[in-house]
Image (cartoon, rainbow, N blue to C red; front, top):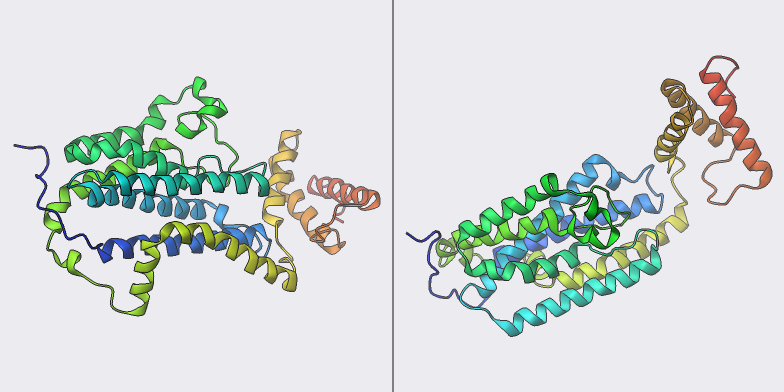
Length: 328
């Protein structure tokens, strides 16, 4: 018995709207996540909710859905035989876009530029995943498990060097606005390949394959899914431009950055010998006092006098937390 169902006769050449719709839904989720990140980055919201535990979970889910669909797309496009020209053109477009993202973010965010983000991962994973399109589904499935488990069992100090960050097998986390290393993320591409290999025979002629986007929302999502690369490249500059215009009118949120300030304050305070509970009380006291004194949210560097005043507030707040003086 073969390890996976044999290929059926070629499916019709037209695209499957349901797959494009799924890709469009993933794009919509990604745009929403990036809008949330931009709101926090521009200090329009009290904190950057995209960087919370829930926000990071959402980001991982969105990235995972894209990579799963990459695997599905590889099978649908090449399952009846490798189409070299379309594959090479697609790979060149994605690779070129990934390089563009690296250059642009290197200029805009030099300390956290994107050196191996979602596009880089898609490009490399497409190349690595192509042979699995023609192997049994079980092979792709086992490969998916191995790749996703590898970071937990293979991590080694030798792989901590920056030149190996793209693998994801080191023990540290690089400072990057978008980091999607091959391990474990390539595993989701392999999972998509395995899933498509298993379901492709049943897909041909099914209701899913025949379904067509009829209403405006579905047609719009499917259109975006068919043109996902230009949408990806354009959406973030447009969002940043619109929200930058908004913040120039509204100004930053009065409590923007307070949560991260308190977190950093507590970390520094405990690291320099402060008691954890006193540090927490002092962090909140200092943040409140800086707002009252007009030393918060101006966006400008402190003058010498303002810096001395802020330091005095911090010291008095810690002393108050220890119960030796009244709070400021």
